[in-house]
Image (cartoon, rainbow, N blue to C red; front, side):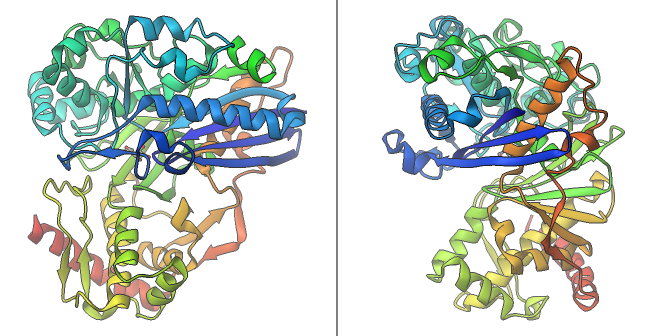
Length: 526
Ligand code: XUL
């Protein structure tokens, strides 16, 4: 019986999902997380990141991700040796856009890992940049405009790469680094995204970037799924030789490096290319057909959906990526996700149960009280100068503030994701806050669609495990292989019957009007 491992290196934690597949028998064996702040306090992160004096700059130590991977593999091998002995293939998912800068030594170390020494010791001096910029960084507005101008405008860039230049995207981040620290840039031999970096460590080889994560860089030509020379030239000198190759999401990079096999007694499983967390969530939520959306309520709130045909939003809301199924997908990100909900919760000294009770104590529409929840700089809509705004909202009224933050988030998501394919018939809720029934009822009422939740707690890690399964059955000689993506996800992604929420007609009517008012308030504030 084959066992597949999916890892998800998200902003705040590393999660491992082990699944077993044997014909129609499909089972999640293990779901384990390691939270960076708690498990690896020496790196000094808060919520997985480091913020300095400049609120626009947000980074994470790449060595922390290395440490976490080592720790997780050791734990899996020690605690589930019998399952791990049947490990057939591994893939992974990682927060998108973040970049890792290796010097010559670091690049050489990838293919020469020594099983006698911890990974961190071998890689400690392998970076030309100690701090990796992550998706929460919004310090590169100047570079975004420079890149757009150099390629002939924002619309040209979007048509080629799927996106206007976004501050967090890897290309603008690389440009900023090459300008701010040209010597360190010159000492950079390889620039990986988080996903391809971690895949490289498992494979003991320089792993490719898959087209799903490559789409989050403002550097890849979306149709041929290859680096776009104009974007490379517009971004930084000699970038071509610093980037890994782009290869399909189902590429077998190598077998698990001897480091892992010797050190933890792991089998030489296939290492499949990693992808971004949103492309992996698409699979792990079962969004292998159009007309379904997934809303992930995590550090960021992210809305994704499969697209058969390429559709670009002209005004630069959201972006289009290559999907791991071989099609396209739309992604729209709202940065003020769980941190905004936590701010409101903490301001009134609530725990999540009290937060839910407060939410349920106010009617749909919140008696007209509204919030623009831009505690941090916002991605959608673009808000450079943060600041939460209240509209007819008493700042000391706890239930009203709780309802206001949740309604605002849901209305912003519903309004700004229409471009991805119209109103969805069903919304799959995932992520931490999807465990809150009151929040999901608001989501159903605002979207006017059924909201469901699947049994898997981490759709990105599950999606990575399912991609490992898919790639393995494609490549196993003599195997019939899986017929379709519907077959791949079958038995893992069906909605949990205990977690289905129907839109309520009265509330849907209230929100239809309120969504217009909310859009108006956004326009007025900007
Ligand atoms: C996607 C995005 C975030 C990160 C972190 O564009 O910025 O969703 O992938 O999860």
